[in-house]
Length: 506
Image (cartoon, rainbow, N blue to C red; front, side, top):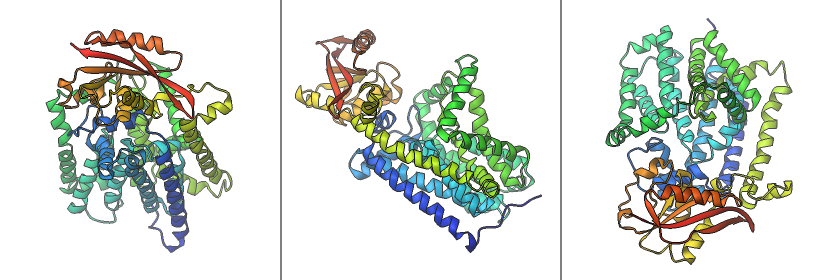
């Protein structure tokens, strides 16, 4: 059986230096973007619900939401740069771990390609390594877990209880970041049962100790859910069925994955993953294949019947496909000496052009102006500042009213409006899809009497949204005044309308 390459020597220092240069360069780019791109809906919602820290949260576990809040607390500010900083740093650290893991298994050149391709794939360049989302800590802790126990999987060292205990902690941290971390554990266990080397490790106490430690780390999730009727389980499971059989949904998911990864990386990832599972050259290659295959195949299958399916759910699988793709690039570079480097360099150049344009569009609407499109033609209220709402509340003396609180139309509106108004303004459960807004233990709310239902709409769609707000709010609130409209602008151009409906509770 073919064995993996020996660990890199001094002749591979060039690839290490190149990998470091790429990772650090993109780190600088993301640091700049993190300060200039406005907070968007998911991040704002995270910051609003974590103003009252919890053991776990309705839709995500503890670290997923707690890390941005910890950063905000340490900085004394909810500014975008500070709350995104841990995720930006973890994104760079994840790219470095991919280099280290791939270099150890396949050699330094493969490690370089794996790190570069990971770092320049759209989803991993921005969403997973820039925004304050669960993916940042999830990928870092999963990769760190693999790196810790990799020597034993390669047969270099005997099972070490201390190493496995540490791996149990990092796996527990991954599971506290996002629930899909459990698929990593399932993949590793399947490989250990499959391979003789894995079975020998399973015969020792070390991996079982790691499993117990990882499980113990998830105690906050279980405690919170026991206290709240297992709402997380009901919420997450409800998304995986009830949509009826649909090939279209499956194809849309594939299109989303392609957009997140670039078409060629997506294709190479699937091909190398299939080969690693079916025809591995050595045991650890199959392990990577299983780690990649399980999330990809699972969510592809679920997409056929799910009521909701998002492309990023399968991205943990693609994370572990990058070492396989990097190894393929390294072996094929002599065959296509010009094509393969271009498949990495050209996408990176495109993204480094698009990223400033996206930031410019978010702050000034310059791109839509150049294209002659309406100023509200993008997803305005989910990715722009809502400072007009705070200014309006201050002008109307609502902001300092000790009886004032807001009732957002949805969790998205609750995040954007709550973030703009700051922690001084209590946020009641949303009218529709409140998610964790319904579980915020804000003891200020019962005494507050002056409520303001808030939503947002495109500039020409306010009447329909207002009618919906009135219908839904009527079941719990009484109107106590006329609604009004606040126009949020960017660079003096109207972007969207914020609708405010004054009410009082019954």
